[in-house]
Image (tube, rainbow, N blue to C red):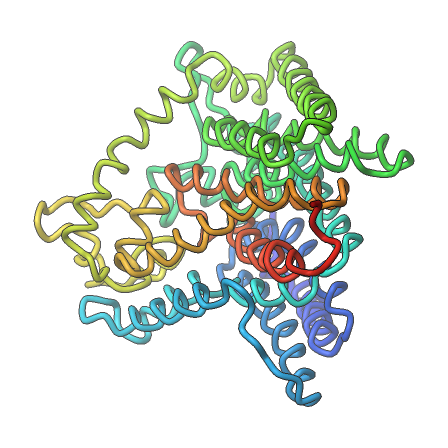
Length: 478
């Protein structure tokens, strides 16, 4: 198969279409439509194009879209001479951004040129906080946001299932990026995205879905699961048959991923959703929604286990073993280092050594990824290690304060909102924020798609609905 980048016609056409999309996002006054286009791009195209082309620079496209939307909105606001007040919780966001920029000049950092990639991975989606606050101000917009999320997750789940039925060589033929990750080439040498059945010795793939790494399809499915439950309960009747079909895709994404972390995070998100919306007169609806979700997920697992293919092997791997005990065994060493890092590097080491930016390191940079006290390799595998090593205790504290404040507001205020539909919709957005905190014990959440854009955008939406709008008359029950 000839690499896509060697086909000048498709590349030129794709570049022209993308620049047209960016120009439209910049000039379009309907920010909700521009953000919908961005959401579809991130959910359906960003990861696939990166792996299909094998070109890391493809990911800069999403930054261009975010900058176009934010830049266009800012220019129009300045022309109208309207004030630009800082949204509630915006102080945390601005302070976090300031810490990231300051870490660029950390004496132990990679310097200005090497650290820019690190700044990018921390801040590329921060503008979505302000856009989410400014744009999503109607219940109909929240409904559309949930529908886009569910649709992207379901489509990715179907793709994930197809990938799980392929051999490693077959999936590697999808493109240079797939080949590198599946067969373990380049920076993925020795860590190919495959698994081996200890009983049969069969090698199976770990599906990507429409994301850029193994398990990415499951991550967006976990984010969409509470949204699916909410929509099944409050959506118009004509939409419910379509939602049932979409539910199958979401279940496929989780079931075929072989990710124990996805199972744990999905359980946490669903339970958080139930607790947030739990009220005496909503109890039966909550129970019914949870039952529907469990039945769909169980039915998907049951159907997969009844067949003999690559998906079966991945699914058995998470059903037949203790997810929590395995999670503890695989991540305990990473978690145990957090305290040592917090004491040894309270000011951080500078941005760019961990996360996706680490792949841009040059000769001589690697020495900074070794613990100067123990001589062992620094561990960036969890969100908390990543933040403390990159941003120090200040960056970690600001991120936690923002996250905990949002979670507290969700638990306290959503159940007091008078509109039942709005309660369920906001709970569907807030519940995965708790799941992301749990997922942070297993991996980095603020430097990858879809978790990073979801966090910042939903943080802005919740800031509006749970603080600004919450204080308006007739929004809260007596």
